[in-house]
Image (cartoon, rainbow, N blue to C red; front, side, top):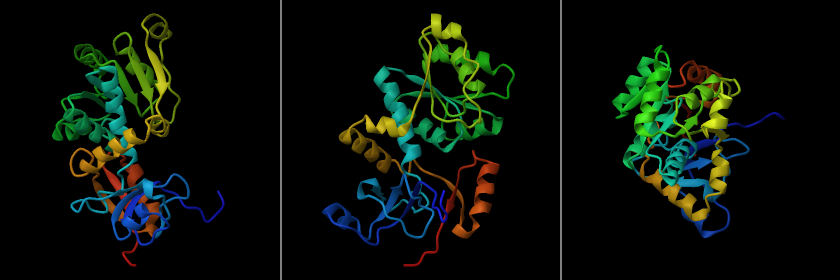
Length: 276
């Protein structure tokens, strides 16, 4: 990239100026959460389209509103897909991540069970503390048999995989006939693998990708507005974002090291100087 270059996708702040149109003018002075797909938001000032802003309720802090698009909308989309298929239980990897915690809470609100797949006992404990009922810890030797039993008992024929690697195929192997794994991340750094062709050929199992941008593009304006409304109303409940630590922009390297050291331990935020 040509330097200087801005990065970052989501943030929050106060609208200090607006272009033409009544919606932008209405937002001047309002506290908002924002998303910007190009150009970056790690800055003191950014320019965004008014339609990519969510006005924050008074009881939601800037930190709490700094991640109110990608993770919450992903959780909403997963539940919508499950409901459209009549699926009452779904499997989710990276279960203790921010989106994993949101998914557990949002799905419970609408009667969909989540089987959260995690890597460590403390992650399972953290999920249990927020009301999760079903956790699979892959550090336990018999985790696959436990997962197979749960997916069969709950009728979980839909999984969302943020990890990829061999876990994609291992999930599919543990799920009932007719199941589908949708891969939406690659936290393992490896391509999806360990997929048994027998399952694809004889058991009607499938693997496909999920991309939130594509899902939203196919949803239509009113459906997207309904999704955003759900998120806005749940910013203090199901879609609450927990920020562990805030860093000034000048300490970006330290912030990244802090976050990558334990990516399941909530979020790190950048907080520019609070000056006009």
